Image (tube, rainbow, N blue to C red; front, top):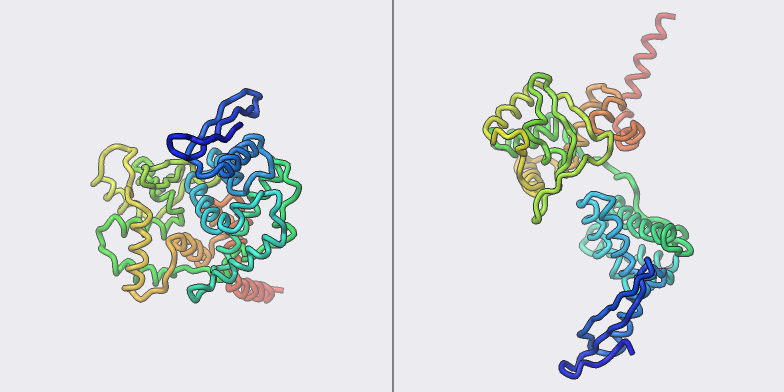
Length: 358
């Protein structure tokens, strides 16, 4: 019998033998169950997971999914996935067998998200709703592809939210100057903001910059890594995509500021230029923009601000894609196409001038 009562504690013990996927036999033991039913239930779930059976609980399957993803995705990406799964998905589906979740269950979950998003007087953004839905959809797709789940209930239920924000936030050059004026002139944080605005690099790329990445003679910054900073320490990884490995030309004033600042640090080429947490920049951006009377934007919106500045200056989508490290120019157009309509009138006016020669 796999479940027995511990005479000393009055609790139940579960012990049994099982075979792993390689056919090897192992012994499993666990104590401390309040009832025999709990002990046998734990045994059943363990065996379902060990056999990769799609009738296992959804909560058990998500751990398999996250463990696999941890070997394939960046640590920060996996942390984001885990948060969404734990906070938005498991409360509804965690105790259900994954094979028994129906399209109507997904629809009810979506309706609850739409209602709950208004609990504090504001709705979840369309992009956030889409992100939550995409995570559930990804788990079911994974189960269908690798664990013989019959179908993905999300496909019949349909999605919620939107992949694109309804309105992109960014600062003009004039607004960014107002922001800088409200910051200490010689602060490393101020220089970090200038670097983000005038290069369009991602925050993780900024935090990974070292002295060796600066080339003062060529006025360039090399971007070839990203940093995720946590309580456990820094995790240095390759950039987001292959095209994110790039060298960005920057104006002389910025390379001069960066080089002068680097000279105040350790002479080691691998010394990080900005060894502080992303939270420092986020709070400074929030507090200073409020003090300067500027509209509130996110830290990532400084990347959008750089792109919008380049568009205003007349640079092509191809050049902007290369500078931002996008895999395809189509990505740039999808994200920033709404900033180009103003250029359409300029095109028409120039074509009209050309027509006068005929």
